[in-house]
Each structure stands twice: as C-alpha cells, then as structure tokens.
Amino acid sequence: MNFVEELRWRGMLHDIMPGTEDLLNKGMVSGYIGFDPTADSLHVGSLAQIMTMIHFQRAGHKPFALVGGATGMVGDPSGKSQERNLLSEDVLQLNLAGIKGQLEKFLDFDCGANSAEMVNNYDWFKDFTFLDFIREVGKHITVNYMMAKDSVKKRLEGETGMSFTEFTYQLVQGYDFYYLWKNHNCVLQMGGSDQWGNIVTGTELVRRKGAGEAFALTTQLIKKSDGSKFGKTEGGNIWLDAEKTSPYKFYQFWLNTSDEDAKAYIRIFTLFDKETIEGLETEQDAAPHLRVLQKALAKDITIRVHGEAAYEKAIKSSEFLFGNIGIEFLNELNDAEVLGLFEGVPNFTISLNDLQQGINVVDLLAAHTSVFPSKGEAKKMIQGGGAAINKLKINSVDDIYKQDMLISGKYLVAQKGKKNYFLIIAE
Image (tube, rainbow, N blue to C red; front, side, top):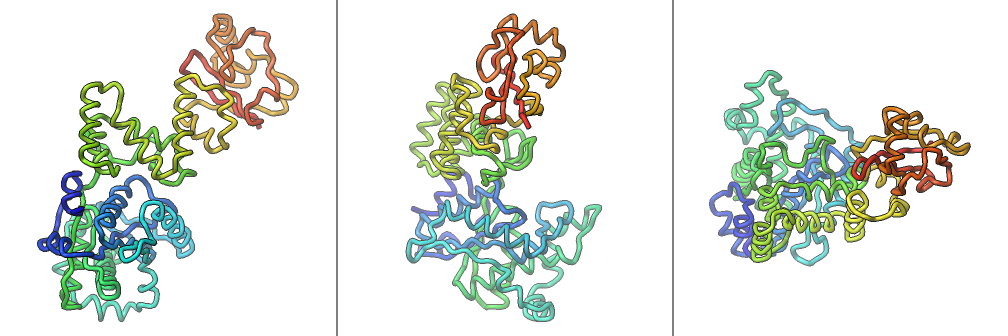
C-alpha cells in the first residue's frame, strides 16, 4: 500500500513537501500528528487525522501520536480569531488519559517495528527553562520568518491582536518536531492544512539547529458542501466519548449526511477500498432514497468508535422512534441513553408522589405537563384515538396512571399522533 496514493484517491491530500513521497517509498518512516488536549475526548473533527495515522500505519510506517500537554497550556492561534483559555495541569492530565484511551481503539500499539507510540510534549518541556529555550531554540528562527506565517498575519490584522504566548506557539511546536526527530528518528509531521506553517517551522528548526532533513504533509480540512462547519450541530460538537455524545446521536449524525457529503466522507472516514466505495455509489445513484452510502458510512464509523453492540442499540433506537419496536426496549437503556434518544424531544418532570396516588390521564397530559395546551384538546385527541402513552393507545379520558406504569421506574413516553413524542420524567 502506497500511503500518499491512498490519501490522493480518497481526496485527503492537500500539501506535501518535495521529497516526502520518495522518502516514504524507500522503507518504514516514523511520522507524527499532534492532538489538542483541550477536552477529555476527541470529536469527529479529529477523525480525519486519526484516519491519516491509520493509513500511515497500514502502509508499514510508524505513527507517533503527540498529545500536547505543553502546547495545550499555550494555545495554537491557527484558524482562531481570539486567544483561548489556558488549562491547568490537573485538567490536562485528565484530558490526556481520555484521549489516549480513544486512540488505542484505532491504532495498533503492539505490532512490532511499526507499533504506534504516544508521546506528551510536556515530558520534554516541563524542565526546559525560558532562558534555555530562547538560547537553544529562539535564536534559530527569525522574527521575520515567524511574522510571515498566515496564522500570525491574520491575528495581527484582527481587532484582538496576538499575545506573546500565542506568538511563540510555532516555536514550541517546531521544537516538538526537532525533539522527535532527534530522539525518535521522526522525520515527518502530518496535520490539517491549517498546520502547514507550524509544521514547516519544525522542518526549518531541524535544518538550522540539527543540520538534518525533515518533511511535511497536510490533509484537506473537512468542510460540508453547504459551507457550514463539519462536526458541529445545533447541540455542539459530536464527540467520540459515548457519555458526551450517545452512540444513537453519533449514528444519526452520519446517517443525516447529505448525498454530496456522503460521497466524500465515505472515502475519508472508512477503510473501504475503492471498488467497494464505487459499488456503493452506483447503488446510491440508482436509488438515492435508500441512502445506501449514508447507512454504510454510519454503520462503519459507529462500530469502529463505539463497537457492534452500541451500533445495534443505535439501530434499535431509530426503529423505536420511527418503527414498531415496543416500549420495553427502553429498559435496555441507561438514563444517559434514554435522554440521548429523546434529545430535542419536549420533556416534562412530574412528581413521583403524585403518581403513587394516581393521576387522571387528561390531567397528566394537560395539567401536570403541557403535552396538550388544554384539557379540552387532550380529551378530543384521546377520544379520537390519536394519543398514546408507552406506545399503547389511551383507551379513555378516565384512565388513571400510576407509578407501576413507569418505564425503568422513571419514564413515561407520550405520543400525540405517530411522530410527536414527549418524555415525562417522574422524580
């Protein structure tokens, strides 16, 4: 497998430094990608770089995942309009542990010579004094060189300017490359296209300080066809951590991809070969309404991130809301999964004590909650057979609901018509 060609046909390659491809074709190369530890989980925006590392390792090369315990304390100005909050060491350590666990799902850390390795730049920066840094690193890179970088220019032209802390970021990242080159024979840095300037600073530092040669490769930044930012929804980031983004919501994110985006994403985010992808595209073109690409994409990524069982549960969750799976399915879910399933659905809290006494169904739906705006409308819908609780049609306006009717001892699911759901939580 040719690493660069793999990125090319998948539409992932953006820039590559001359000589990089020749180097990669000669034998095993050690290369790295940096990950930002600003949270204890990566999100789908990180998946493109994770996939780059997977392809790199599958091509026989050795990937290093650098988690920026030190650079997380500084903040990368690339692509940002203002300085971000700096993190404490305790928070960073928690974040590093979470990210390491996630990367272990994708990369093989025990496969011999090209086993993946994780490194933390805090390890080599924690005892590096400021005076030592400006003597050993700062003298090799001119201010003119640093000022010419787009990430610096844009911030200096903006309203907020740029702090000295952020200005030094490219030197800090450049030293990462130099350190890995010197101590781990790491000769290639990869990253998103917005990282080109920082990466090239590292190759310059290797050349000027170490009299060596290092290389750079960047991948396309992922964008949606409508111009909006990839990986964001109205509810925020789509995380790889199941507690931050439920597997159901994760699955739905990919399933709801547009046809145009699905054709790009299935190349970037899956390991399907070209023949398989082209076959899926042919099926999609013949019957777009079946959403073959979206289903294959969502299934593959959900299983790789969350596992087969979580994928099956996500499918059942979809069928519960849109199909004929019974209410007993909710007993298989924990509280976070139930709330994730009904995210965006109106929910109401009622008193558990009131339920113990028994609540008339009309009062339940129009007084204790606002499933219906009035008791009159609730009665009308119930008498017309258009209202249900726990997927069972309400028989009479005189029905009484008690505690023993709760799902998992906590929930009632009301329906107004077939598709309008309401979650009632008893506390």
